[in-house]
Length: 360
Image 1 (cartoon, helix red, strand yellow):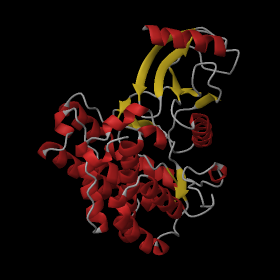
Image 2 (cartoon, helix red, strand yellow):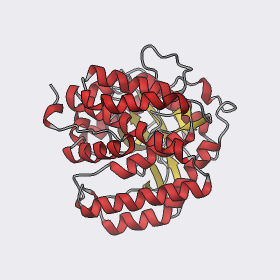
Image 3 (cartoon, one colour):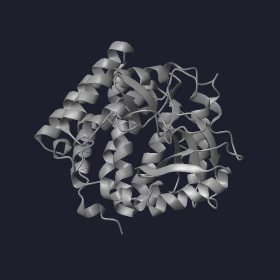
């Protein structure tokens, strides 16, 4: 246990009223730091399983208290359903005990569907568990959101001037429009106008519960089994074609600086094309897509992500609710890939060049 983990373990033990063991950093993302730990005895503060791996998820970025509370409610509602999620035990909105709001939940077995330390490991994991990854998303879309109380949870997308019960598409377009204006991001205005003009034909649709950030790093797998879906910060209710479009867009367009075989090069582009094609084919075979809606939502998903990245580069990641270091992941290669993807889907020219998006 390093010094930082030891300090967290000590403060967490005082908060829970139970000895904390094996505390270590599990992951660090754009919004949170995640620790793995266990308790050696019964906790006075809340009921926790003893001597079993648990996760401590910090919310260190903007609006951490509201995001964490919302994620706790979502996980609690989904626990025991066909959608496999880590069971949540408690959420603390106060930053005083540990330095930031935090959530305690089960540590599900396995690792992310995308393993980046070797090509062989990544390909093998995808081959074994990709079917389960797609099937789990479909199971989520088939849940009755109203009976689970998910319709009573505050929406993820609530731009100023839009009622909370407005269709998700309208709220997403409102979010994009606010970013284009505040950035400013004039490069996206023609594509936004294209999407807004067509929105009335696509706003109505099925009322499914959507993850809206469902991709291989947020799916935990072990062998052929999906053991948990994580990171529900963007979840909302809307047309399932939008959630599938968001996943297809992420798989198709996101590149890494490391490893090289997932960079914006021949090997990376080939793998992204194979994985995205396989994803769409598998989803459609199990739950037929409306391809007119799907293609339109691919464009909206790309614009939403591109506008978010544009704000992160121009005005800082904190404005989008992320930690400052998140902006470093929005590389020129990522912007180029996503700009080309959005241009193909909207039929409009898009060029977000890196120099013009340097944060002030």
